[in-house]
Amino acid sequence: MLLLLFNFLHVGVMLDMPCGRHCSAEVENQWLGVSLSRRQQDGLVLACGHRWKNVYFTKKEDLNKLPHGVCYKLESDLNQSSPLIPCYRDHENKFGNDFASCQAGISNDLIVMGAPGTLYWTGSVFVHNISSQITSAYLDDNVVLYGSYLGYSVSAGHFLHPNSTEVVGGAPQYGQTGRVRVNTICFFSFAPFSQLGSYFGGTVCAVDLNTDGLSDLLVGAPMFSTVREEGRVYIYMNQGQANMKEMEFTLAGRDSYAARFGESITSLGDIDDDGYPDVAVGAPQEDDLHGAIYIYNGRKTGLGQYFSQRIAGSALGSAFKMFGQSVSGGIDVDGNGYPDVAVGAFLSDSAVVLRTRAVVVVEAMILLPPSVNRTHALCTENGQPAICLKTSVCFHGALKGLSHICVPHAEILYNLTADVKHIEGLQSRFFFNTNGTELSNATAGSIKTRHGHMTCVTHLAFLRRDIRDIFTPIHFELQYELGEHNVVRDNSKSFPPLRPMLQRGEEYSNLLTNKTVFTRYCAWANCSTNLQVTHRDMPYVALGEGKTILLNVTLSNAGDAAFLPMLHLRYPSNLYFIKVLDAEEKYVSCKIAEEEKRSVGLDCSVGNLFFNTLAKVYT
Ligand SMILES: *[C@@H]1O[C@H](CO)[C@@H](O)[C@H](O)[C@H]1NC(C)=O
Ligand SMILES: *[C@@H]1O[C@H](CO)[C@@H](O)[C@H](O)[C@H]1NC(C)=O
Ligand SMILES: *[C@@H]1O[C@H](CO)[C@@H](O)[C@H](O)[C@H]1NC(C)=O
Ligand SMILES: *[C@@H]1O[C@H](CO)[C@@H](O)[C@H](O)[C@H]1NC(C)=O
Ligand SMILES: *[C@@H]1O[C@H](CO)[C@@H](O)[C@H](O)[C@H]1NC(C)=O
Ligand SMILES: *[C@@H]1O[C@H](CO)[C@@H](O)[C@H](O)[C@H]1NC(C)=O
Ligand SMILES: *[C@@H]1O[C@H](CO)[C@@H](O)[C@H](O)[C@H]1NC(C)=O
Ligand SMILES: *[C@@H]1O[C@H](CO)[C@@H](O)[C@H](O)[C@H]1NC(C)=O
Ligand SMILES: *[C@@H]1O[C@H](CO)[C@@H](O)[C@H](O)[C@H]1NC(C)=O
Ligand SMILES: *[C@@H]1O[C@H](CO)[C@@H](O)[C@H](O)[C@H]1NC(C)=O
Ligand SMILES: [Ca+2]
Ligand SMILES: [Ca+2]
Ligand SMILES: [Ca+2]
Image (cartoon, rainbow, N blue to C red; front, side, top):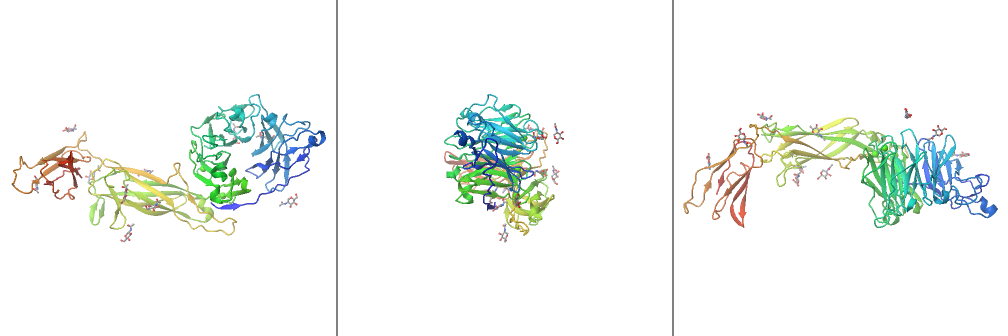
């Protein structure tokens, strides 16, 4: 990823702005930018300062300042701003009675404002309809306790129905454990999470993770502690009608000490082009206040349990502090078709824009015949008939992401490995003749795919001659990666192009296996072997008759193919085994059998017992 640093934009703040009949603004220390949000379709921006105060009564009647909070609405060119102070009431002159500390977010034509300071920190949520200019407040129905901070975090989504909009407010101090409410005409609440002081609801983010049209919900508990403030994010999937079901796992990032994972949560849009939105979670205090953000990918079932990427503030520059305190996404800054991410590092007064690389989506396949006839030589190898297996490696590419950088095709590099699941201790039963001489269980290749096309390469895998295992299926494994691409710089664009990357699958692997089997044919209905051992009659051996004894054993199979046959020979310990005649030719390999450290005979594995076979042992 490429980094760009921007200076902060300074919003024109009106010092003497008209805020009401009994209003006089104090903008010092208003914390402008405590919340920032931007409307997708037209770029309308909302920047809030929740510590903005009304000092009218302070001047006139020597009363307290009223910390209403302010939000500035800015058009997309950030040129004109107009203030919104929904917490202000004309005659209210004492702190605590009414609304306070408003901050906001935008969702379509709604501006949603949290007012956690309302009613002695019970909190409330405001909704301002931009088209109708109507502001409504959701007040407590005696369920939210004093000091709950409802509205500390806000979000909006389609919880009840894909066409309706509801508001979510977090109340992280509710009973000191936190609670989240989905706010419509009435409240819906979840089983509150019970760790004391976890700040559950300190962040809420409505996002339709599984793209079923209904918003799902991510809830941060940044102060959740196993040792100290590691932080957690809870995932609630919408089962319809705002019936929220908690997923069986929580997100934890790296579960680092004092990380405050979940301090910020935002939907990034679909950055890996798989159709599901992706989210970023900030852990701004991780790594000794350097901070990090974690990317999680949406999917059909909701969200992946493990992050697909961690971006550490320290990796971008040692100066960054509290990187990830705020994260914003969903906007394609460089016009490459993929939404980018902005991350605030607030202790170092900087923000970073991380550009998303184009994604190449490939679907890979290993095509294999349904079975291998091990008596039917389809190929020749070094002039000899050979039993072989035609394996085709195919890639189908969706290369939308490459059109922006003028790359007509994607090069995929791959390794194909034969018989990856053979019996331990035995050799791979198939090999590739990669070099004319060298036999290898793997072969490498490359392929160029064009958008929307399936491209295949065929490799021949040869059967080793001495195989003994004909029952274990033959698995082929394909591992692939994107080749290097020279990206062409288009001088008309202000951003240099980025190298594309491969879309990563659900398990984050570019690994694929497929299998075939040996054709099984059985002469017998019960499909059984019929092994027979015969040897030349030799009832005894007279001592001194000769120095060597030849034992001629014939092993034959009159039935169906045998699986890993073994021949066991036992003889007196005063005989010493010399060798097996023609062992290699007959695919026989013997090991001396021992009992209590005395050699008592031979255990021989015998290959190729699919046909009638002969074995001879020479002692
Ligand atoms: C900003 O607004 C002022 C007056 O409203 C106008 O004169 C100026 O040209 C605008 N600037 C931009 C960059 O649009
Ligand atoms: C906002 O107000 C407009 C105009 O009254 C209305 O059509 C629209 O449905 C309102 N939006 C929401 C989300 O309530
Ligand atoms: C929801 O909105 C879509 C598109 O605007 C419309 O076709 C559909 O009828 C609406 N459904 C309901 C139940 O209102
Ligand atoms: C496995 O091989 C079969 C037969 O060639 C094919 O139909 C199937 O698509 C392959 N599967 C994969 C994942 O390559
Ligand atoms: C395998 O090949 C042999 C020789 O060509 C043939 O006789 C046999 O029928 C084949 N077996 C199967 C199951 O196709
Ligand atoms: C393939 O061969 C290499 C060395 O020749 C060996 O290390 C590796 O284990 C083999 N892989 C399989 C799956 O047999
Ligand atoms: C192919 O053979 C050449 C020369 O015979 C050798 O230099 C090269 O390393 C071999 N390549 C592989 C992949 O075995
Ligand atoms: C293929 O194997 C080689 C050697 O083991 C390795 O260096 C390379 O990264 C592998 N390529 C892929 C696409 O896995
Ligand atoms: C299988 O069937 C054959 C012929 O019917 C018979 O001779 C043999 O004993 C059977 N084997 C077993 C294991 O049942
Ligand atoms: C072993 O016996 C078989 C048949 O009984 C015979 O054909 C073969 O020649 C013998 N081999 C030796 C080395 O005697
Ligand atoms: Ca959903
Ligand atoms: Ca995605
Ligand atoms: Ca982009």
